[in-house]
Image 1 (tube, helix red, strand yellow):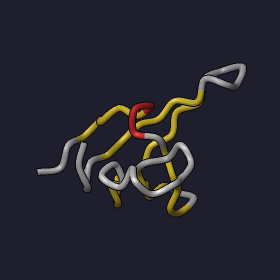
Image 2 (image 1 turned 120 degrees about the horizontal axis):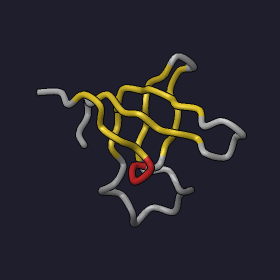
Image 3 (image 1 turned 180 degrees about the vertical axis):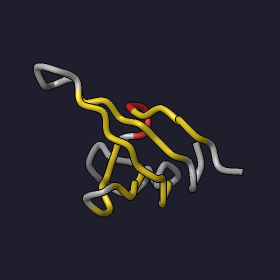
Length: 64
């Protein structure tokens, strides 16, 4: 997973699973020394910039 990849995240907490698509714009996985929430990547979606957790995502299109 790298900046520029198109990602999918599925929310299984709903009655019917909901899929979200976003473009990875910032990778924060190298900065674990900083206190933070569960998120470790920033993704651009139709709602703007959102914080996601990388291990819950699937790469659906890798940038070159």
